[in-house]
Amino acid sequence: LAAGYNLSIAGHVLFLIELSGDAALSEDETSTVASAAFAGAMVGQLVMGWAGEVVGPVRGLSLCFVAIVLGAMIGAAAAWPPDVFIVLAASRFIVGFGAGGVYPLAAIASAETGDSHRFSGKRVMLTFSFQGVGQLLAPAWVLILDLLLPNSRSLAWRVALLSGAIPAAFAIGMVQRARAGAVHQ
Image 1 (cartoon, helix red, strand yellow):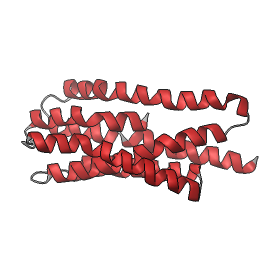
Image 2 (cartoon, rainbow, N blue to C red; image 1 turned 180 degrees about the vertical axis):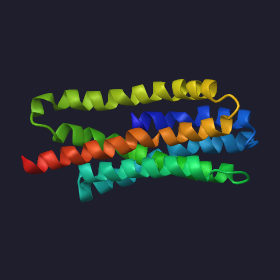
Image 3 (cartoon, one colour; image 1 turned 45 degrees about the horizontal axis):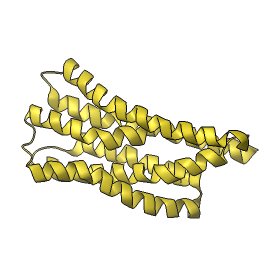
């Protein structure tokens, strides 16, 4: 959910930024901000896939979710004119790094945790199906925020970015509980 939402929110947020008048991003800047998360995801898959081998998939997954939370918070809180472009691109890269690391580590952690290996394939399938839910929630949430805050689009795009931290923060707790349960078994 966290990875899907955060990888798909950038384009919708850029539209709100344009409507709010907070920044007049050029086409190149818009493309860079939108692509930064995907560049970060590629780096995150490689780095965190390796890190998961070193520290374990559950700890690695927790680090990925921390990166998503930090990136979402930085984008929402620190992107003020005239540095909107730079801060958004950097924060989207950080979010992408975390989301990219989630891909390999979530599959491993889902397959390895739990009480039955018989259902590990179903856990992996459910893990990845929630990414689609996140991708659907992103435009729906931006539309709701735009309807609720039509005179405060600057706040709306910040809330949309910050909202990406919520499922990641929740996932940190879930991952730690799963880890604690696996240790006690």
